[in-house]
Length: 150
Image (cartoon, rainbow, N blue to C red; front, side, top):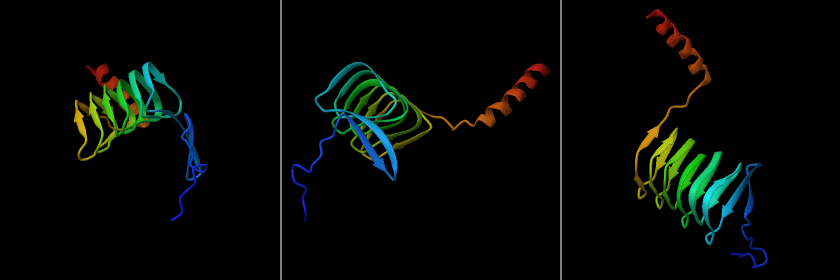
């Protein structure tokens, strides 16, 4: 079996571009020795192996907490994947996934959730249905007509 030489092995840069099926996805990485206290926000995906305390805001993007990642923060993102430890509330516009080695202590608001066997989830879960723009516009006139009739 062929093994790559040391010169061929790549190091993960802090700004990593992943290519999947012809689609380029940008992702920033917070390394294992990094500790951040405060607000972390961005407009690309984030992979956390270090520690964050404060708030994490990556609306419409993926936040992944790696196996060695520790987050003591409220997280707002499109998608959150937990392999490490999170203490704080999570608000996802799409999906939360807690893998078997992951743990979450905090409340969750999301449209979809996946909790694997062996993971820990301690807190409230609110699953919201996907809202369609047509549904909202159809409901408002009915509510207004009901109020006007009383």
